Length: 231
Image 1 (cartoon, helix red, strand yellow):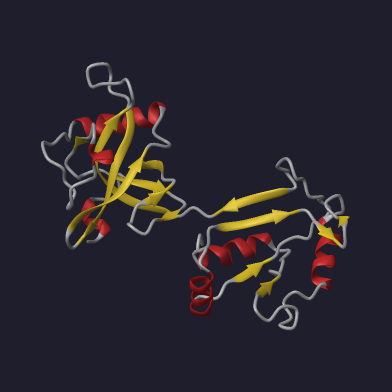
Image 2: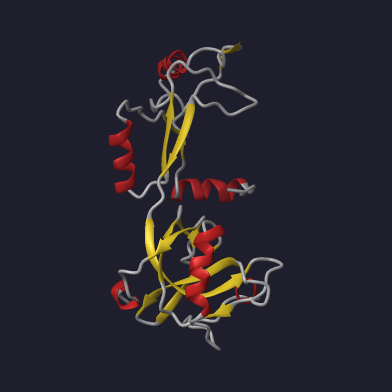
């Protein structure tokens, strides 16, 4: 993406060819098809034969198949490590300007167990004022120590956060338990704790640097100890 040099783009295309995935057809031969049901739009799309090499030998097109068994498809998507599926009513038109309940996303969010290595108070809150949790800093045991996996702020409001905060307050420590120093954005305002509390975290996926994307707190694992997580 974002390559403007034609020579460089051609070289990249040879090394990493791109396939265009076409999901819908909104206009054909000057006619707006958006008001037609998805079933008809898809039939028109398939009739174009875009996946035939002779259509444009320089571009790889693909019209992804559809499936009518959503539960099985969702299981298959999860097994392949995909982010989720989209379910669409075959009778649905296409809306340019708004979302529709006729199209539903079903994201796949795995859950993992992680160790709490610190926390931050909610903005405007302090230990003296009751200390409402704003986020917990989590890690994963590895042979090299506790590897930082990000901040978790979603899911710790209300009583869930109060119960977790009560556990962590008794574990305050002078130094970070993480194997590597945290960046300023993560470390600012952090209260370090002894890495003894294991929690479950649901997340969308993992970034290239090992952080959980869109993490959400799902509860304390009283049945697990840090040693149970490996490392």
